[in-house]
Length: 268
Ligand code: ADP
Image (tube, rainbow, N blue to C red):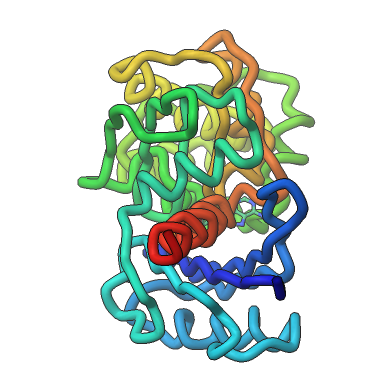
């Protein structure tokens, strides 16, 4: 039997992600291509991410046996055979990477979700913060801009902190004023960043405790690449948190995995 390919597309508020999977021995799946464009729903990001993922592996849309779209902008994907909530996709993708996962903390561009996952990677329950930017990637982007620091440098700088500086407000607008005031007092930027990460951790852990934090805990979404946030969350929740270099692709990965399940149902 020739290999089958599926495509998972995750159109977020901030970034578009695409993963192409193929069959591997013993019912396994193998990533053949992945792409990310830092523009989300309502932009050229969705079309570009699909083109890039296909170009990188040399396949065409017609080679995909099933295409599943997820994320905030999932309704706008014409090539998709099916659409699914990002909650199920993150649960499934996290389970593929970490089979022992029971709690997923997903911090994306504009929202935070905490999911409880059953033994086979099926979503049990969740809580979500979507009404304000507190604790999200957007919050960190605003803070990085005020501090004149690249987003990618926040973690390294935070690790160099030597003195505690508290950012007491979790509201983006108030926290931004607090950071400006700390800078005006000549506080060290590394200490301020460390305080910002703690502020995110306090906000997210409050949400996580509402669904209950059960091991293994896995962090997904773009912000998981910031090890400063991850460490602050580990301290706040008093538990180890696992993550992967694929953290931002977990939704798209889950979508491509669930596409295989849909394909199985069609073939059955
Ligand atoms: P969405 O699905 O809502 O579009 P993502 O899960 O793609 O969100 O995450 C986007 C967020 O990830 C951005 O807001 C940004 O703050 C954060 N991010 C992306 N890359 C990095 C990085 N290298 N370090 C820290 N944060 C990052």
